[in-house]
Image (cartoon, rainbow, N blue to C red; front, side):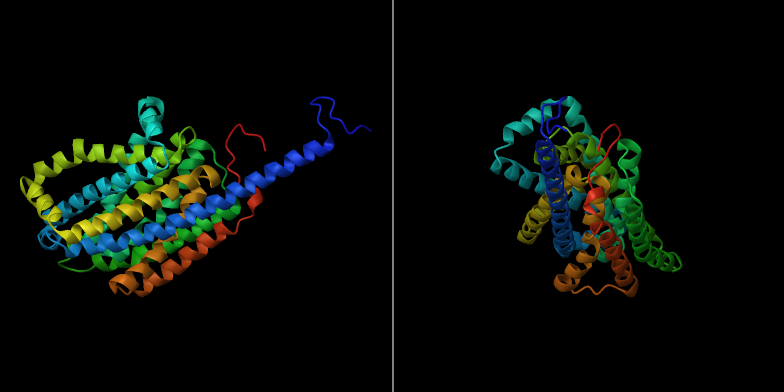
Length: 362
């Protein structure tokens, strides 16, 4: 028996070494995929603290007391300013990495940049929905309402990319959904049964916008991430979100609110406290998104989103520590269940965590 592969000219030792290197590379990718997803959860949770605190600044204090029109306007102004703050930090990040030229080259590649437009739209709607949920129902609910997004992302990734969902991954997603239902449903039933509180349903619609938008964004952006750098792609995505606000969102707000929109923005930008909050919001959200996008090519959209869903219980801890907000029993129970669901996904064997799509050979 010969030790030479007559077809390829490799010895059996060479083949074994290549297989070992492939396994080592795959494990390295999986490990870093989980690290990036966990960093996303930590930073994403931190984003809710300044996002909640900004409503204690003018003009948001007054707007939040001005009925539905004031609440929606406050959410729109905060979401627009948040998008600008994140984009500024992304420009700094890309410039620091020496990828500014790549950013402009990606913009010129229409087939790539095209996919970041719907990603910016769906992600922007998710962020706006989060602020709507925050102003109507509260920051605790807004923070955990998006916990359903891994299910949306995983189903779309399965439908569009044929990403494999193992039985263990499906169980983890199911447990995550159960936790989200425990957080979402009791408060909704209670609020719908209360008289004089009819407007709070708008906040629950905002929560639905959050998890649908973020789940859709991950699946859409996954297409472009196959052929573009995550740091550059993310900057293109937030460029798209800011442009959507400038071209569509701000004109709609101006049409509905009139000059109150510009007065509110001027008042907000005149407050040093608002600037502090925007810096914190831009920094935490920009780098949580960097981590989020980097995890997708390494462990898949569904798994990357599921691990990042740990932001939910972490955000409740942050809001309790820094905001003095104690979550109710359903928040605590739902958060615990969500942690269990994420843990099921996190402990899945590495041998099945390689992103497998249609047409690829193992």
